[in-house]
Image (cartoon, rainbow, N blue to C red):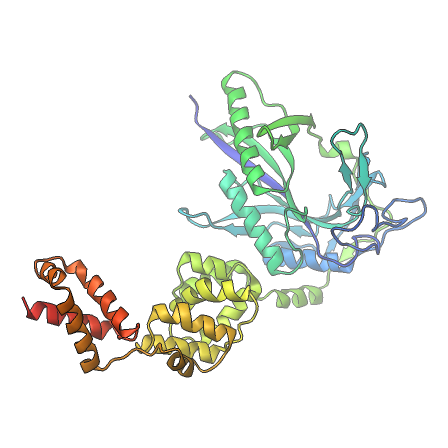
Length: 475
């Protein structure tokens, strides 16, 4: 049987978090009553004229700069003509001939694989359509036009992805980036981020692409992975049986896990694109680009690399760099920390669950003092994590004073430790004999018993050394 390669290109749609719609002043908000956010402009009434939303342009440029795109200093709008009930004007305002951003790439990471970048073809601005509602048991459909005119960016990749895992990584990376830039909430469940997946297969080693099919409006990565798996198998089975793949637009049915044909795939000429006569060209100045570039700052993949360079492991670095505010807060604390990797463990396991990304009340200097108590052996790492830090996050104060009040300061007095260690060994003669015969793992048992008797106050390194000395000197 021939071995096939999967080839995937994405058309990712990002709804922008502007206050108003793309070409009118209707409110841009999710969750309102149906048809509450509409006006004569968004309904396409005769005689109404669109006008540009400058924040949509700024957001497009900012995303393009973050992705390393070429920013067109002059771009234009076009009309994409088609009829559907949720498109009141009978056309969509979009960019065809002259998109605002060209080229670029998005870095992705997949566990167990080398990082790589997915190449982009372009990014263009457009408006969203409304939403058709097909209620079960009804023989008619309803239309909610609140979404009609919502500002969108469409990010079109090259056919550069090779698996459902890469699609997942791309969409996760894009969601992280638009949230990082604060241009969209990236919420797939609400339709703020969705993609059309173009899939084809070809024999391995073949340079020519196979015939592609497009699966529309994937707003769940779980569904996208299932749809891709089914479609790849379907196309391979067709080719292996001597058939051909027809270029189609298809839909995914989550119930059955299958795709089915909606229509023969349209080509550009089917939409009769032509320049929109009501909207002037978009001109982006060098000053605009410089200002927006300065607002971007560190990008998420750069933040991840910085954290790795500070000694964090991959999981901690990925979690902390997932959100811009989370990363910025951690870096302030890391600047004061005597041990950044250990700080990261406390941050991931204790601070984030407690604060839910809010600024901790414990200052960076006092957090550093807490870590110093651990480094000096005055408080055990376990007690610091489970008792002292939660207490300080609830009621900030001096870590040393609070540790003393809680009875967490470890005792390093040799006489105190030696007396307890001898008592524990004498109370467990059989285990002591087993230790001397080679069961060295029993040192953990003796340490546990000493900790019980000392109320957790015995300093571990000194205690373990004393226990070994007592056990081995009685051999």
